[in-house]
Image: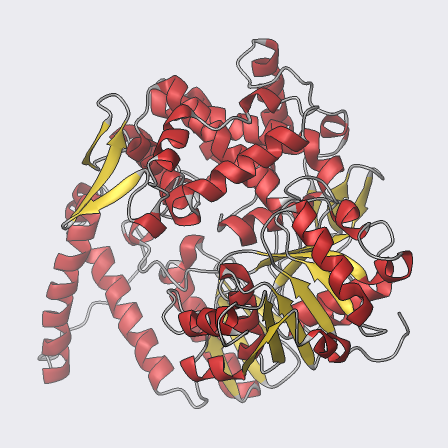
Length: 617
């Protein structure tokens, strides 16, 4: 491709199925002129198939269109009458069914109609990009690549960009910049291997979870209780996610792994379980058929019980002691808690993490350029809070590696494949402030230097990366005040879950003084969610250091003071209720809530200071 400025004004999407239509919808959301192609209908209207698909977009949930009226900007087209329109398109995206022969036949049909600079990309979820490229003349292959959107494309952040051997480097950079800038996506580069990165790792994780769930005798709803928010994954966890994706789609991805990865050391696990095949044969495909692993009867959510071969009320629970340990422990300690747990649920959690870490370490060099791309693929594609390598690193790289090796030697792991040598040779970090480890070169791989990323003020950071944003104005153990080059100051909390304690309140007051003196405004903003988990009750129960206080005769309470006295009684009751849930009620009562009252006073004063600040806050 030439070095002229790359601007996407017009796009064509080939295939008006569920994915193709939604990709077209997201293009018009970005105000890009879009053609949606499909086979001609045999009825009087050759575009009937496309017109029907466009109408369905208006009723689809979640809504693929930003507003329903945007549907009018998708132009219906068919392969018999409108192929000449492809010459005017800057990008053409193929999104037909996952059949190699169908895709290659389509490529041969449309190739003569592509413009001289048109980029052609396949939305395949796992077919070989190099094999697909063979359907194009040699002269066109440098403008071909894979561009794998995740479903639903409007909402899922991840796009995998997969080059073929002849893909032009500038073309890939231009396409990545377009996807990030205009579609708001997170793009990672994947190698041309079956299922690429996200599905390869994500589906393996699901297979490992199913395997260990069965080995541990855990029911589906029990597995979901363990593998959701408790360990930093979506609430839909494992089997609810499978229902949402579609059990037939899941089986297809497993089938692809089985057929295309014969040399994978975990190949024996790439099989569709009998219960899954049974549900598919019955037409129970998950959410889209209103029955799968789960079903809803009236207001009751029911789950499939394999032992009884019927559905029952869903009631999966996490063992209370394990739940408390994981919920209130530091992230660095959670993997150790799982491994050392004597409860079957804890051992299950350790097993699924151990085998996931093992698989990621072995496959990294084959599927990705570096560890960052693997972790971001799982975060953006599957909604995990942290990727596998991040979790491993935070738990202690060397220690966890030793535990994995111990279990491999003991025959507890799903494979006896040794960990690759790089696992032992690197330091305690696979992600560093300089970048992420790349096993093929044995070096640290820096983030992309494309101009589009220099414009991002707050890119997603990984554990171990330098997560400092902007230029620091002042910083304490509790807060950081900073700016991005304008006259607006930003205050961020550094406390766990951004809880508000005495030190944070003091930091806010100090920041206000600085803002009123030297800045035009101040924004309280956190670099990552949540904004704040509320009051730091633990800090509230700590005894303050004794201080000399001069005795004085109290003045009669004002109406304002009477109001806040009543307010504090109400606040105390709320705090005490929360404290009982945290087993802190005795500590609060022993101190007669004096420290809590002091914090409430300080919070009120800080709130008033923010409200009546001399600069906008």
